[in-house]
Image (cartoon, rainbow, N blue to C red; front, side):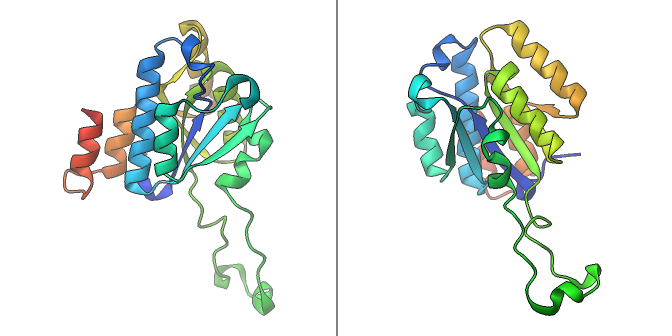
Length: 204
């Protein structure tokens, strides 16, 4: 199964000013997160970011904050390690509007699709720390029946062992493990896509 750009949403977890300096390979991880946000803006993929305890760990890093603004991303401040515990799931899948009038009495196959039916269920997820906030958010999203695609080269922890343990656990739980380039080329699918050259330039 490939990613579908029209079914995707991007979530970037805790790329914050006081956290990134202690993350292993932080420059590569952050550069890929910025690319993901740029691609989301270009391809009109809804984007979201989280910030863990922002009064202590600060806002998202400036390099990412500007791109998030361009992508019109919503930012969720949180204290729980899982962003789903703080309401991320409701942002990703807004409650369905109640059926109006006599439509409730129609057979199900004749009723209009609800907002939930029409939602974007593929969550492209990247962030820090991979074995704590990203892991707990991803597992809760899987529990809520989202498809979770973890972008491994845009995820980090303070140690390689912690990061890799998170990937092993996520794969076992049913998350798809991908890279930034995989996301890029699955979102556009073809060299004939109108945005292909711009996406290719971001990757190069």
